[in-house]
Length: 247
Image (tube, rainbow, N blue to C red; front, top):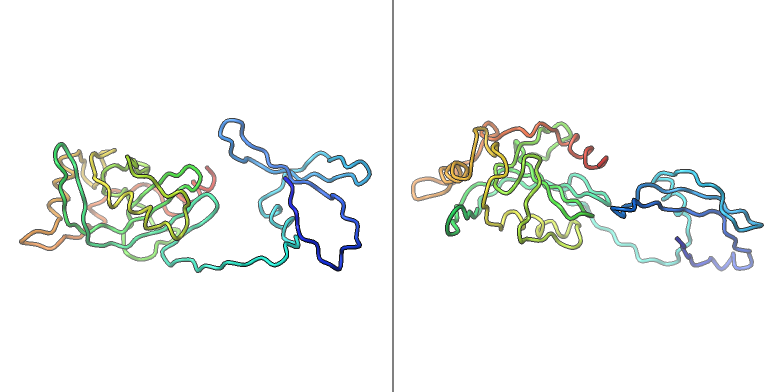
């Protein structure tokens, strides 16, 4: 890798020589970067020494003093609903809301107006995949918050959403959160991917009937799901994020 910086005028009489090199190492199959090494360069022979493994923080520190001239800096506030953001993962939560939920179970599409539970979304920025869990309350989750299986179809027992024909945005940022959510909320649910979408055992028909009993109709407003009606996923928010970081 070669990084070129604009030189400060007061240093124009100085001799610029290579000092060290950072080498990124990739997995031959996945093409993902697995580590980086720092190599000193011999000023007389311009040859690199054997490298030592360095961390991401050390890499950042190595390049922090580059004189890159006048660069326009862009600032953006982190939205309140964002829990975690890195170069690989974006995690946020969505409070409960009343809205359409579409089903296509063995026939024509059917629309129910229901109160969706609070949800936790996690999108992998590299592999473009999304996991969804339910939360016990509308409050901002903490590290100790226990996650629940999302009481929704098309999501398996570890939270992976079957995207079907819907695609996640090319760029995963704060600004694309609504687009990511739409791949779930605007989809037509077709099947359950595990038997514990609710606290009781479910299949396609029992799942749909349960939501239908909660839906708004002429006699009742949309009925709220309680945590007791959902099934624990067996993991806390902290454990989930740590699992994704270490993956």
